[in-house]
Length: 95
Image (cartoon, rainbow, N blue to C red; front, side):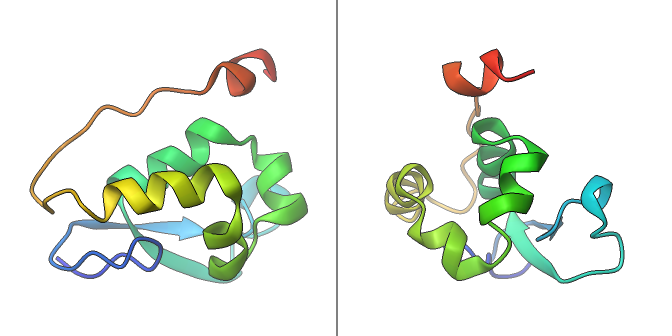
């Protein structure tokens, strides 16, 4: 259990998010500890190429319009709540 670096909720299960995706050369780069919903939301909204191009820091992630809306919502959710994260329609088309 820890604190999510993106939504800042405490006492949540965290996963390691490579700020520069591993497939784009970030295997040994900077990482962030994110709660599972935040981590899934990033990858549901954006391809690894999009993440690598403009979302490689916590401040950049927090300032992204789509993620900012999600973060505002997730902060109000209890840390024990599990939610389903669906790929955005835009993301589905980018395969």
